[in-house]
Image 1 (tube, helix red, strand yellow):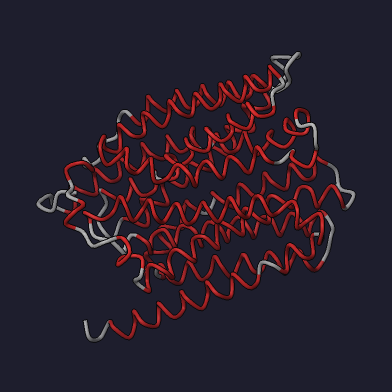
Image 2: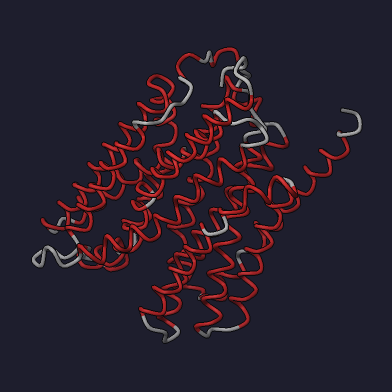
Length: 403
């Protein structure tokens, strides 16, 4: 944001951009919702070895991790809006490839499609940072929260797209659902074309500090670890939960409803998360989110009823919301304007790299160790992240009087 523009004017622009990006998030966020819902099912139909049935879902997460740095480089040259327009075209291509894999019954082509959809997701994941770019420091947490609200709509749009399109191609079940995903990506073009973001290419990145120096900051380390723990553990437990429910004798419908409540828990609190951060601070909300994730694991260990699974998934979703939004807001304190693109890309690469690892490992750990082991494994990373954020808050408060 231009330093000579008054804060009030800047926040009017920030509010406009946050609303636009929230709408784009509603469409782009349906991309992973559709693939997570159908990837394992279609993979089981196409893969010769059922052990690889969930690989398409894991490749989605891998695509997000692999795409964050190229996406950042593209936006550095073309600006946020230009990069997001290309990202939406990539999303449409991914949906088409996935649908082609279903129609031709080629597992490798279907996997390629989900990976390309992950590349689209790497653009979508940076919407929250784009909203923060034009916001004043006081409005940034709320701007991020507004964008994340679009995920609540995505949680409805994605499953509904599957519901209305799943039977349109009887000879190739669910192919139309992936075409619908591509159509939603094309619709997003109409929305992101209205974005008015500062041109990234005019910011001289050579004036900033080296990335290694920025990443060695204790506050950056604490913020990124909190984000990757919040997101990685959410993906880890969420991926295992439906399979664990079915293994415990619960119906597929019960498992699906549990995931729906989980999505509501993930995005519903965004109505007030930004205000809570303003009131209690970024560190406090991040700590609360991590604690709720740990509480979800405690609930998972205390029983195997439908109610236990559902409550654990709701707590897991709320914990992700507080932990991830809080940690994202903390990351925005770690860089200067001329450093934002490379730091945001490094943050997302680390976060979604951990999510991809968690997704790949979840099914195997559940198969060999069971639901109990999955929940016990939540506590060590939570403890590390909590210690780092609490320590960083202590350091911040100790430095406040001197400042």
